[in-house]
Length: 229
Image (cartoon, rainbow, N blue to C red; front, side, top):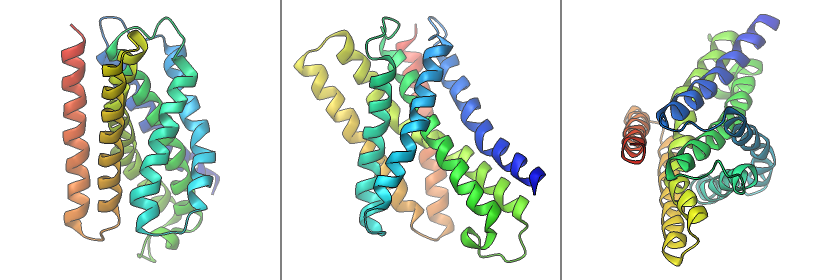
């Protein structure tokens, strides 16, 4: 069990670290300090715990998954970035908002991945209908699924408000405040759509979730290319 636990935790944590490195590497002209990126990641991870507890108090169902969770989780990630770097002078470009928002989202997602993976490891039947699956396969499989699809999606949705947040910090105008509100609404809407698909037990819905992640990632990478010149 010790080997399975270590393998599951490693599989749950490694993707978040990889995606964080990838997003930071896109800001090649003036990379953000690792200590600030790590701060956003860690605060995103820390804030995920009370957020999950709070959301769990709502009745389980479509409303919690599609309406409550996306709104509360995006607000929690934004709060993590605000606490971590809002007053830091290094937060001085729109691309920085993408990096810090993605890091907070990935910290948040990593905690989720650890939680789901441990449940899959310790009680394989709780998340998988296949009684023949081993605890190790269930734990590592869940960790990789969360790390490859759900993890980057948390970062992608956060990037919708990340760049507008940076613009608001640089110039506190009404227009930038509206851009932040629009970006936040877009993040919540995309997050809600993703969660809605996760409730549909079909292969088509799963493929749509993967497609959303891929398209969102391409949009974010294009945003980096536009902002970092």
